[in-house]
Picture 1 (cartoon, rainbow, N blue to C red):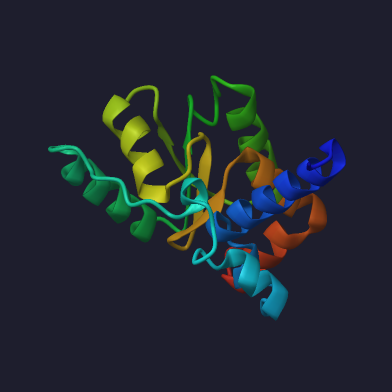
Picture 2: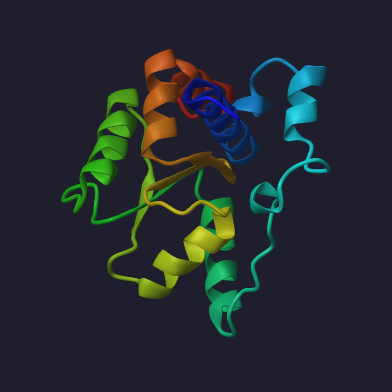
Length: 166
């Protein structure tokens, strides 16, 4: 029998593994050690936690191609609810405030005006929530990850590495 504490620890470990796979923390941190590499391995993972490839609905491939073009052509792009001048959700507001605090210029896409983009961006990144931040074509994460990176100084470090911030 698994105690509540053991189960909670296991869930935290699984959450960390899921976030590590999706987020880009590993792109600018130390190399993954052997024990973490084992955790990230999907060979012994439950089917619920194995990566899944979603089939993109007919007609969505054009939207995904548009998103890919936007992400690659804009050094910093934020897919959000509303606009930077008028965010329509607290998480989008938080992401905008962080980017403004960093002093960077960024592009945004209001997913509320574009339903197809709202759905396709989730497929494109395999991340279920909005806002979504991309820097130099790389998916950074949603509000929680961006906030954490900002607080830790990692976001500004990344922006400087990409020569988007002095």
